Image 1 (tube, rainbow, N blue to C red):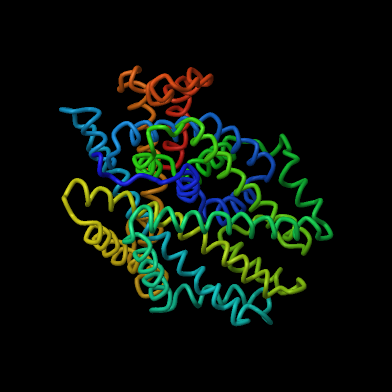
Image 2 (cartoon, helix red, strand yellow):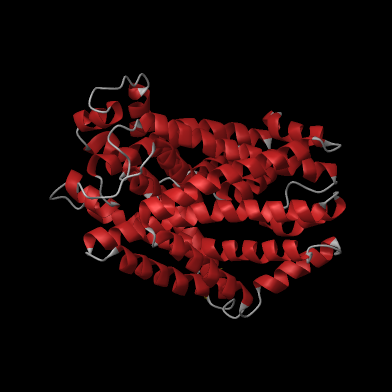
Length: 444
């Protein structure tokens, strides 16, 4: 497919891929997971999981994508002709649409709170009132759905401009903004009185906090944060140039993704401890606990605006990558134009996203196995489809592909010396599948 789009620069490829991995999983989910699971012990295990599981699976997806320069379905058909392995492509396609649907609801919440922060609506409330405010908004009969729809339409406008003018351009703009805002927050948090307690919570792991549950949670967070098994990184790798180093790109992406997660912890935990709040607040940390802290800070409105702007930037870079999985599939496997493929993907996400948004209000009584539609999509995609996809890519590249093809991709046909190749292949074949299986069977 010589006429297929490619990233124009190495920086564009890295920025887009990092944007794919960096999202609410790092800035929203990582702090509350670390807060609920012992802080330092959780982070230590998380870092080990990124090295032993994250990088090998990223490399596996990169090999499949760059070797074929095709969407996930077309790539598996090309690499394993005559087999039925291409059916596993639908794991990533379905998971991406499900995650995009419920993820966009949270993105809609962020837009609502960004507007509230700008207008001063997050000032002058008691801690209890912030809880009531969020519960009232999330269960409103139409406001969450409105913001979900508007966010997805914005996502659509970026995607229909294509790889170079849409995805690559927005990633090159947004990722530096994200890091700058994070660093500003971290510097401010570290200057707060009591910041040392937050640092000890993060970086002084206690052996008493290490448990099987914490290990499983840390592995699951690494998996979710890096978007492993979703085919996001495979799809972006299909746009890589043949001269790009897959191992270097995978290492840089894993490092920057982890750096954002750690910076998010440095942003939040010193502030939480400084103002006597609890780090075990869970998912409501961003929407109920931090507004209380901002209200007590100098220039609190400015910090609130910066936080929700940061979350918005992280959201949009992730949702465009999730959307690209199905768009590339519709475009290449079904012959649709870019505009039509983008429209089909957006319409599916709009319908499913609206249902997820309403599951806190008018559709709260609609449950499947005791879960609302929002919770069901989250559970099925995060706990079932993503781990299954991660195990598949590890086994497919580690065991089913010809080793010569894998080595050619990792070394760019012998032009690069990859000293860690044997370690990567060992982790890909044995460590990653076993670790992912542990997460998989502990969460179902």
